Length: 350
Image (cartoon, rainbow, N blue to C red):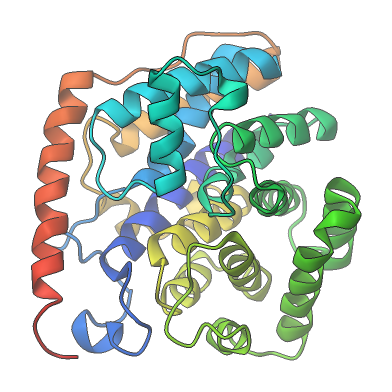
C-alpha cells in the first residue's frame, strides 16, 4: 500500500506550491531582494496558502477514488470537478485550463474540451498519479486522459508522463535510478518526444557534473525565471529532484530560487520528493505553516488515506468533498492577498 507515498505527495505538492507562490512571476535576481530566501512561508503574515497546482492535485486524487481504476470514469469525474472549480473563480488559473473549463460548461465532452497548449498544467497535477497507481499501463492511461482534458498538445502530455514516472521512481527506490527512469520515459512517450528526452538527459548530465539547478536553468536560457512552458518547467523540476532526491528542503528551495513560475516548479518537485520521503520527510514547520480551508492539511491527509485504501481495494469509493460556499469565501480572501502582493511588487527594491 502506498499510503505514505500518497500523503507525502499531496502534502509535498501543497508545501512546494505554498512556499513558491509569493515568488511567482518574480525574476530570480529580484526575488531575494524583494522577499528573501524561500526558507519559510511568506504569503500571508508568515503563513502559506495553496494555488491551482495543489487544488488540481487534490481534484485528481478525489477523481481517482471515485473511478477505482476506470479511466473513462476518472475523466468524467475530473471534468465535473474542473467545471465547478472554474465557477468558483480561482485566481491565477492558466489560459488553457480556463478555456477548457468554459468549453465544458458550453456542453462539450471531456474528449473535446482540451485546447492546443504546451503549458505545464498537466505536469503540475501528475505526480499524485505516479504516487498512487502501481500498474504502469493504468498509470500512463490516467496521465494521458488527465492531460488531454485541458491540453491537447502532445508536449504537455509528455511532460506530465515524465513527472508521474519520477514520482513512481521516487516512491519505489531510496535513490533515483536516473537511467532506468529515463528509459521508462522514453518507452512511454516514443520517438515524438525526442526534444523532451534530450532535455531530460541534459538535466541528468548536469546533476552528474554537480551543477546547481539555477545553473542548469540558466543553460536553458531561463536567466530571469522558469516559464510556464512544460519543456522549461519539467526539466528544471527533474534537475532539482535528481540533485536532492531525499532532501525535501533543498530540492524545493533550489527550484523556487530559479524564479518565474515558482509555485508550479515548487509544487512538482514537492510532489515528486514527497512521494519518496513521505510526510515525515517534509519539514514540520513548512506543513504546519500552511493556512488553508476547506482544503486543510488534515483534509488532505484524509484524502491521501482514502486514496490509498481505494488503490488497495481496487474499487470505487466516496471521496472527501469540500463545501462550495467555503471555497468561494476562501477564494475571495486569496484574491485579495494576491492583489496585495501585486501592488507590493510595484515598489522597490527592483
